[in-house]
Image 1 (cartoon, rainbow, N blue to C red):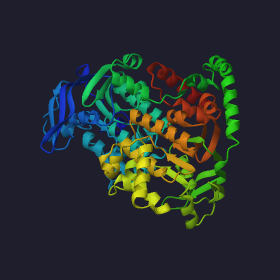
Image 2 (cartoon, one colour):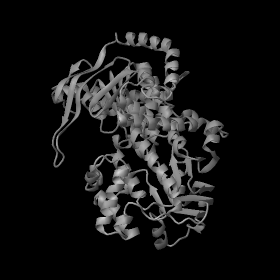
Image 3 (cartoon, rainbow, N blue to C red):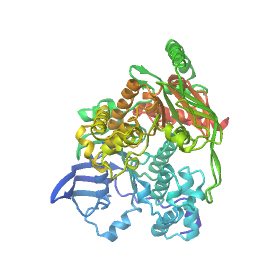
Image 4 (cartoon, rainbow, N blue to C red):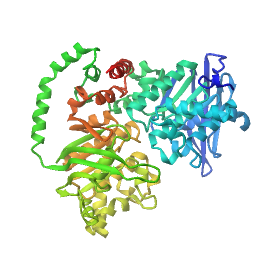
Length: 601
């Protein structure tokens, strides 16, 4: 391969309109000498230049059926039916033949990048290996192309990422690396298994633009596996809805979103949190984002006039909240991370001033690396502050001792992002929930059992689950255990760090309803950390926006979502995909206008 070909790889060979044709594809797994069906007689096809989204909850068979196409399932699986790429049967190919198909003709973006990347090789080596295996590039050519790909997926420092090992990058950065590696060979078919789950909304928008560009440039087909209906509305042309191994509904994006026919599809769409909609209130976020640009200005101003009364009512409600006791108080707080090996010291939060009052939910939003989790960890005493003053639950922890932090933990609970890693895998969930009560209050025996059962009831889990281990529960059930554990000591403050990001939309909806009900009942102050503005729209009374360690904007939910003042907040809102294909097309164009206006400014 010559140097001239580095930037533009050969186009895929085009032989027919259909890229992938799946007929009666079934997948079964052998468990205890019994075949358990995971996918049942799936039939669908994808044309060139089209995106088919397969949606459904975890366990519906989405990933298993796609892995079957590439022969990536374990030995206890049984695959029947047909899957043809450009008319060529894939099922039954010899291993050497399938290796040529993988990567070169069909590429896959896996859901868990940490398990898909080799931990003992650098990122650059792994991308170069793919390029050299399929295109015979020299090491120099492969390195140049690898750096170009890492830049295309918006990694802030491609050279640093190129020389890094997987454990040295964040989850979002690893997902971008996976996408870079997957598109390196310009495949005919790209199977994207939850490609944006770990990404911030702004990066997600860039990745979706990138996938759209790949589809258009090479007329490639994309099989999108996701539970994010906003991503589906933004990218997909057609939808197949799966439940319990079956495709229960198929159609174009417009058909399924506007007139879903199957009860499960209707329930799935109702469960999706929709930015700008809370109960009977509706916010026209498209018009809101037009403020400050030449687009839709008249409509936005007209909309502003219509809601002044409600904003005034919210201001009165906020004034009433302001009379409540401040439970969390950041006063010009700065937090530094010290030098660690080759990583230099840096300031993660700078002069942050923020309050959370009793009975209030404050949503803290921003991208990965903005400092959100740093503030949450500082609020429970896990990180020392460099400057300023931090008071939590009436206790000044600016320079707290270890004993003072232990005392603080009786008044503060935390729900972590990943419920699987936050629970002890060797401990039954009843013991996990009861552990804080046993350590802090010395409860034992029947008294402890009564409290554990009360907590299981509060998070709507059956009492007989107390003897189960974490691996025996679903993701949503494990997150409920995490919430019960966090609330076991009836804390005055709850720190919720991305508690729903790993959950399916229907499970997420139930967990959000549960958290909302518990917060109203117990009236704890809640710092809810997330990058999902649609989720924070459901829960928050006020919103604080964080960017590069700074709080750039705070206000009521409507003030931030309807009339964002800071350019970063406007970009953040413009990047959020809406679960409506018509509205999302308008927002995509508006986002380009906002970004163009920012570039000109």
